[in-house]
Length: 384
Image 1 (tube, rainbow, N blue to C red):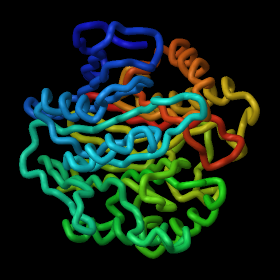
Image 2: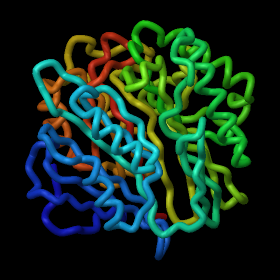
Image 3: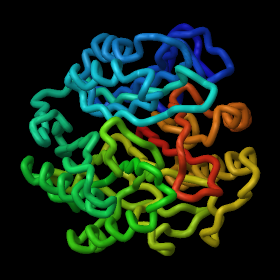
Image 4: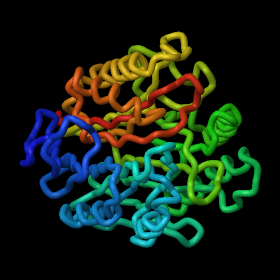
C-alpha cells in the first residue's frame, strides 16, 4: 500500500513519497506526499496523514509544506473535536484555510485524517477574506486564474438549515465576485452537512434553486462531494469550493459522465459525476463523491459494505479509464467509511486493484443515504 523509503516516479508523472516503511495499512504515523509537476518550477502537492496516535499533526502538515516551499491552498481535518480542539485552533491561527470536521468514533480515541493541497513555485497568491478571516486563496498561471474557498458557513447558525445553506452559496458568490470570479466558473464543491440524513433533500432544493438563479445549468455543473459531518461552530453546513477562470481557449473544461452510473441530475441532485481540466501538456480529472449506486439510481448491496466498496472502486476506475487514466494517475482522494471495522475491506480492495492507498485520507462520517456504507472522491493527473 505504501511506498518505499525513497521518492520515485510512477508512470502518471506523480511523485509519491511516504515517510514510513510501507506498511500494508493505510493508517500511518508519518505524512504521505504526492507531487505533480505543473511546470519546471511549479508543482501541486497533496499531503495526507491517517493516524490514531497523539501526534502533533498540525505542525507536521506545516513542516511538510515548508519543506516543499509551498503555500497551503486548502486543508481538510477529520478528528474528534473534543480531543483535538486545541489543534483545530492552532491550524486556524496558522493562517491556512482549514475545514475542521467531526470524526468521532465510539470506542476509538485519537483516530483522525488530515489532507492538505499545497502549491509551490507560484507568485502573486492573493488571500480571500470572509467576515475578516482568511477563507481562501486566488492564484494564476499562464492558462487561468484559480480560486479556493474553504470552511464557509453561515454567520448566524441559529437560522434554519435551509437559510444557512442559502447563506453558504451567497457567501461563495460574494467572495468570488470580490476577486472578479463568477459563480458559474465553479468546477468543484464540497459540502459537509451536520445530520445530513435529516435534511439532504432540503439542501438539494436550495442548491438547485441557486444553480438555476446563477445560470450554472446553462454552463457547467460542478463536481461535488456531499457528506454528513459536524463542525466546531454548530453550523448546519460548511462548504468548500474550487473555481477556474480560463484566460483563453488553451484550457478546456468539460463535464465527464460516468460509464456505469446515470447522471445525478436525473434524481434531482445537482452535481456532475466528474469534471476535467485539459491543458496543453496535462489533464486533471476531478471525480465527485462516488458511491455504490447502480445504473438505475438505487443503492446497490445495501447491507454489504465489502460489495459496496468493490462496486464503488470499479465505478471510479471506469471514470478514470474513460479519460485514458488508471489508478497510477491518482493524485489524491478521501474515502468516507461508516466505521473503522470497514477499513479492512477498503484496504483489501486497494490491494486487489493495486490502488496507492497512501494518497487517500480516510474519514468516518455519514453519507447522503442511510444505506450507503462507503463513498470516495478522487483527483487524477495525466501528462499528455
